[in-house]
Amino acid sequence: ALGYTEAVLLESMRLYPPAWGIERRAVCDQEIGGYVVPARAAVLMPTYIANRDERVYPEPLRFDPERFRGDAAAERPDWAYPLFGAGTRKCIGVGFAMLEAVLVLAELGQRFRLRPAPGHDVVPQARVSLRPRDGLWMRPEARAAA
Image (cartoon, rainbow, N blue to C red):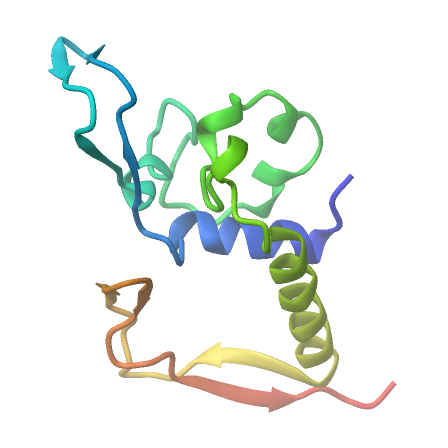
């Protein structure tokens, strides 16, 4: 079972996936939604859009880490969260990336509460990876020593 920090991380990346789209090549002619995708055609799966599908994620723009815990996570189809790809093409660094992110968040979270800086809206920009166009401006508030 995932801890709350991991669930927060996954929900954050659901809304703002670093890999905003995943490209694959069709291995054979395939009909999808009434359209024929010819063999060898490049197919782009926009994870940024797929992660906002209300059929899979009710109220898709609401931040809800509980989507990744317990029964809610177990009931989702396998491809409902393609953040790191899947199958034989799944990113081999997924375990390390998640571990590293959880460690950084836990360390920062013990020392600071981060608040969005006023006047600095987050505007996603799709390049090779999805990133905040003008950076992610935060206001750190020191936590009391325990």
